[in-house]
Image (cartoon, rainbow, N blue to C red; front, side, top):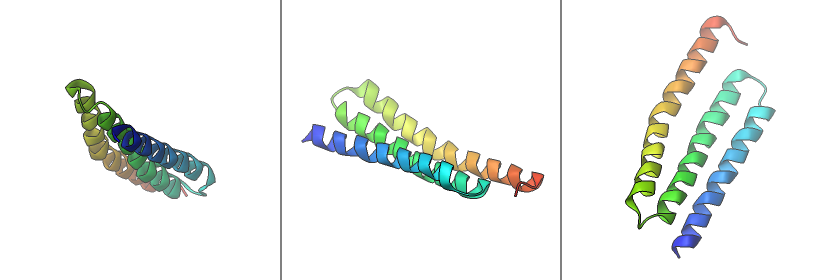
Length: 94
């Protein structure tokens, strides 16, 4: 059962990362590209790391590192997207 949950989380995370890559290629301007890449890639990497944590639930080291990666990603991704968008707005990127 643990393997099935882990595989589901890993495949879901991979799908969101692929959607993020498609969004970066298909969106017309910087702000939509930034939005699609930030939101879906954060969710994708978060699901992948949670799948890793579930797979290694019996070992503290890998599971703790995966949870820490998710925590730091959730903190840094919105801040970096905001700063990139603000810099683009102030420099006049269309």
